[in-house]
Amino acid sequence: MSTENTTPENTTPAHITPENTTPENTTPAPAAAPAPHGDPAAPAPYVPAAAAPAESKTFSLLGIIFGAIAVLFIPILIGTAGIIMAIIAKNKREKLANVALIVAIAGTVLGFIVGAIVNAAVQAAFL
Image (tube, rainbow, N blue to C red):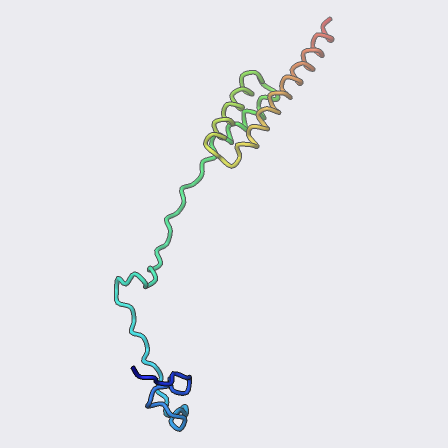
């Protein structure tokens, strides 16, 4: 069994000596060859994403419109239709569904209040 000294002084290769380690005597490592086509480590080519489908706001807009109309005309029918449209919009996760639900409910309630005020005014005028 050999008992070689493995201190840091003896671990350098034999061809590197302090005299030939100047920058002009050192050779750089060769550049890495480009990755071959289909290499899994190579980055994937850029592929633009497909356009996202346009979000529908139909039921939300119908709920808002019916809620606004329900303030003046037949709130029990038109307001209920607006509330139903807003609930459908909420189930479809439309962005304006919460606004439509609030407008439809508020329009229905205001429609009942306006109807009661008009009814009281008409009865007071003719009695």
